[in-house]
Length: 100
Image 1 (cartoon, rainbow, N blue to C red):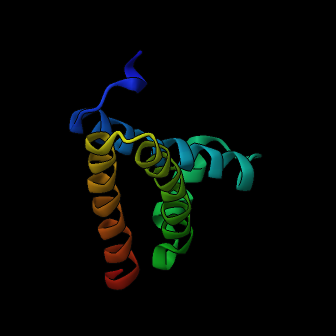
Image 2: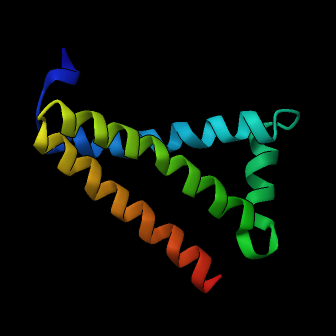
């Protein structure tokens, strides 16, 4: 099974897609009456990008969950990949909140 594999590449892939899944969950919870296109247009064109930065911050919780699972099962290389992508997403969120 692929989830039993221990590699940085798997961690990078999981770390990239988990926040995207988190964004989908956020959209379904907060903006369920709108389409995906309308929701993401609102997030992008909203002054200050408040909703986008909140959505990205909350979506990183899935990475924290995955990171915890892989650390506790001693899959350290996969956890490293998840951590790397979490840092990249975190820097993106920080730059959105700081500079826009």
